Each structure stands twice: as C-alpha cells, then as structure tokens.
Length: 364
Image 1 (cartoon, rainbow, N blue to C red):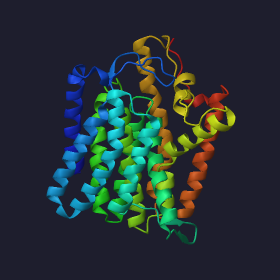
Image 2 (cartoon, one colour):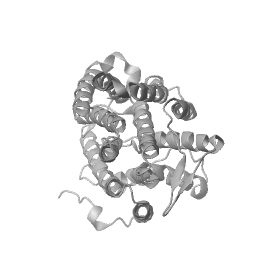
Image 3 (tube, one colour):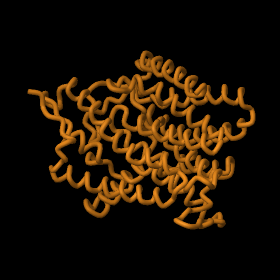
C-alpha cells in the first residue's frame, strides 16, 4: 500500500496545482460545450493526465529505490507508456493531434514494449488446453492492436466525471489482487502506483468536475491497463487469458459495439464520434432532474449521477474476473453473460423501455 499512498498524495497535490494555475495555459481549457459528447457548461482544465503521469513517475522512482530488482521492468514500461501519453497530452494542449496520430503513437509504444519488456501475447487458453502462438508475424500484430485498442477504449468511455477513473481503479485493484495471489511483485506495485495516482486525481474530478482526465490521461491509463494485464497473464501461466478478456470487457465491448453500430447500422465511419454510447444514453434517458438540462447546476448533478450506473455495470465483469482468474470455463461464461446483458440493456434504453429500477424519478 506504500506505493498507492505515495502516488495518491503526489497526484492529489499536482492536480490541485494544475487547477489553480491552468489559467496560465488557456489552451488546456475545455471550452467546447456543444460537441456531440460534451456534457459540461463551464471551462475545465483537461490535462488531469499530466498529474497522473508525473505521480506515477515519482512513485516509480521511490519504488525502484525500495525494490531495485524491478528497475529494468518499471523503467521500460514507463518509457513505452510515455510514447502513448505524449500524443494525448499534446492533443490536450494544442488540439492538433488527430485520432489516427494518437493511435499510431500508442501502437508504437506497444511495439516497443513487445521487445523491451517482453509484453507479448503468446498463448490463448481454452477449456482443457492452451493454443501457443509461436510466430512473431502473428503474435506481434495481435499484441500491438490489443494494447492500442484498450487505450482507445478507455478514452471512449471517458465521457462523465469519474467514469473512466473509477472503472480503471477497479480493474487495477483486481490486477493487484491477482498479482498478489501469484506473487508477481512488479505487477502488484505498478498496478497500485497507477491506481493511487488516478485516485488522487479523482477527488478533484468527481463529482464536481474541477478537472478532466483528457486524452493524455485516458491513453496513459489505457496503455498501462493493457500492458499490465498482458504481462500478468503471460508471465503467470496459472492466470487464464480469459481473465484479461473479462476484466477489460466493458470498455472493449463498448468500443467494438460502437464501431459495429456506426458502420453496419448507421452506415457511418466507425471512428466518427456520436452521442449514443451506453453512458450517453443513460445520461439522456434515465438520469432525470426537475431543472432543464441546460441549467449548469442540474447538468453537473446529472453528470455525476450517470457514472455510478456504469461503475456497477463494470463490476459485473471485474468481480467474477477477480474471483475466477484461473478458471477459463467460468470466465468464458461470465464474458458471454456480460455481452448479452450489455446488448439487452442498450436495446431497452434506445427503445425508451429502460428498466424501472434504473430510473431516477423527478423531484416533486
């Protein structure tokens, strides 16, 4: 827990400093109130990822000082994650890095990690056996696409105060728990470092949204989640590869389902942003308040009330993944149940048939 506490304190202080000094860098303020995915009505700093990244770097330095054996792994992983972070944070400051550019940088970081820290997918577990992937021409592209996809998926679900942050914290704590079970100290310490840094940011982000994660934060967190999950599973054969699938299934399936919906149902580009993600639908069709949505205080309250729905929903995957991390057949069953539940819930909400237990009634 020492790693968690150090990164938490540093992140909380750095985030507060950014909030207080962001007026010196007006380009880092999110002033787009009319975008299809925008649900805020005041200027907000969008560089919260900077505090998280710096807190993890400082926490990693302290961890390496205490446990020199992990210096090579920690330094290599942070170097690779920095490549993904740079594309996002430059976009946060300038708005001039395209989605393709950010994705390519994330892929470059994953490519470097493939060789630098041996983060590669080399097997797939099934019910009674494992399929080895011994060929680099197959393992390399699968690994790079998987890690880049997770990073992009975290960026996609970063739509409301605390949503991506809490979901990521839960996943990281699960990684730390499983790492503890298999005595993988590197994954344990690193997962707690990142979780602590996100928590330090979260106290200023939720519920009032004093600062946003930004692309830098989302890509950094997503990259670290992808790499840590990959390393945990591949370094420890007793951990099923389906643990990784179930743990990350909420942001991953959200991304895949959105791309399918845009391309095959709406006939649009699969990368075009829209406002009908699951979290957007919950915001617009379930969370209701007496004051109209354009009133700033009501908008902020609706924003903060949306995230808990998705926190609980993501726990439908994180909890069973943490409990059944070595049992492939149970993990496969839970993955299928989660996908079926997601599709059922999405279709109910999109057709204005939201389950009654989800509806927040208007105040009288």
